[in-house]
Image 1 (cartoon, one colour):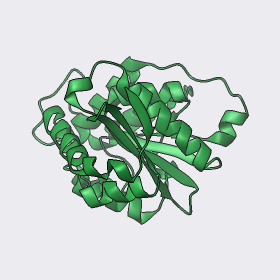
Image 2: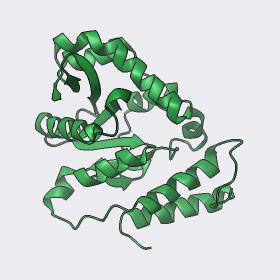
Image 3: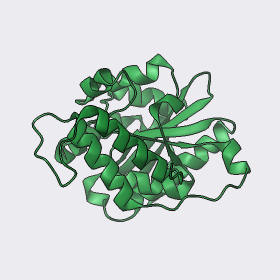
Image 4: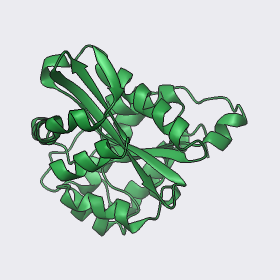
Length: 233
């Protein structure tokens, strides 16, 4: 398995990459911003993508987006082809695109938004921490990309303050301070996901977290976020 910085020789995989991302979102039943082959090609041509190949067979992909005059960088579109899942490939791709981002944009804050607990775990191991949406880039182009997600109405209803996705960020300045990293806690992240689903998804059956009033829900979300950050207030 080879994981390399994508170049023009890999443009032929653009349509397959888009199809794989869309199919994965349908299977999981989660929202995801759709991308066109032309958009994927632009990332490849700019040297802002990595691709995993088994010989000539497509195995996985991820790309870089820069926002706010390159003050913020996002590693987006992480996907593994179904034939190569459950092999630890997503983690390897994520590490490769993360290292590429750090080298190409050394002073940028690297962030992402995701509903996937597996991706959150990988992010934790790379040094990301959970953050509120207000700490992410305010570049309107980034948020415009969410319009193709089926959960975009939630982002609108909350005035762009939160959605089903959880924001996570790697700040190189904080990393240099060598602060103690808060340990990964899958149960807390799952509870965060459950609360968001109960708050925002229509016609969803209640879980053990119950469907709670909006104001109480925001309070619960704040408590969970504080716990994730290691702040018990």
